[in-house]
Image (cartoon, rainbow, N blue to C red; front, top):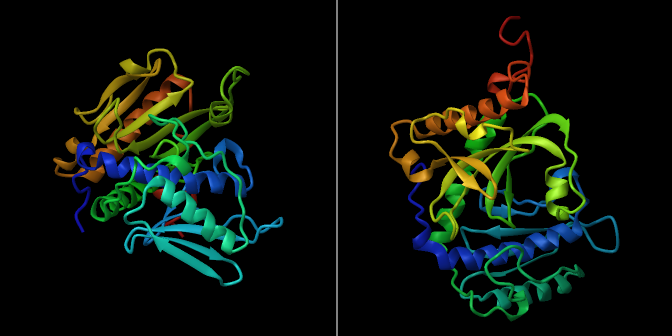
Amino acid sequence: MELFPAMPLAEWTEAKETFHRFAQIVGKIRLSSSNRRNHWWQVPFHPTGRGLTTRPMGGLDEQPLFCIDFDLIRHRLVVDVLDGRSAEFSLIGRSVASFHDRLFETLAGLGIRPEIWAVPFDLDDDTPFPEDTLHARYDPMLINRYWRVLSQVVQLLDRFAADFAGKTSPVHHYWHTFDIAVTRFTGRVVKVSPDADPVTREAYSWEVISSGFWFGDRERPWPAFYSYTAPEPEGLEREPLRPAEAEWIPARGSHLAVLRYDDVRAMDDPVGAVLEFLDSAYQAGGRLTGLDTEALASPGGITDPYYGKV
């Protein structure tokens, strides 16, 4: 299996836009059917050996405990219920409207009736999902490749996450932004503005250094690894990054450390290069926020002081 296969945005824009809306529909069901966690940790998807999962949800009220999976090998949407019932349907050849209607029919047949706001979140258009027949390209080969890239990146970010002993998020695939992220917390609470939107207020109520990967969008039409510190400390964009291909770019009034995916693919040691990049951006944020990065280090995920000595 090729490490980091080519994933140019232009090649799969239509398929990505369609599947992103599929994911938002399922993600909104996850949001409405799960227990709220700090920093929205209940919201994201996680990869499986066949695709993506919501993880189990429901089960504590009138709704049964259930799980929704995207099987991106067979290209099926699968709903499993705790009592053993299961239902599935094909993802191929569906518009967003068709996917929405079939999913809610399938859930109703299993006694599951979630309520969602059936409008895209922060996408280029706000056509309600039940009316969206424009986005209707599901390409099995490209969606499978997206999942393979996603899975490889998740494992790489998980390796990076192991080196930090403080509060850290799991590696999350956020369906609203379609990126993959792992977040380290400095332990400092941030005074958020009541005028900020509720998504931002919860996500950034603590000081964070976040690292991740996006597949590209209209503003930046190329896949890349990234890192940022929030709130951004003064002078962050002047801090050194490694390797040489990495750079700071402006982003919504702050700055992102970026290492482009295609540059990584051309390197002799792509995994080592990404880990070096993420660590350099983390160290930059740590220096400027006064974080004791040495005290919070757990190389290889180990905090046991006697490991290998007894």
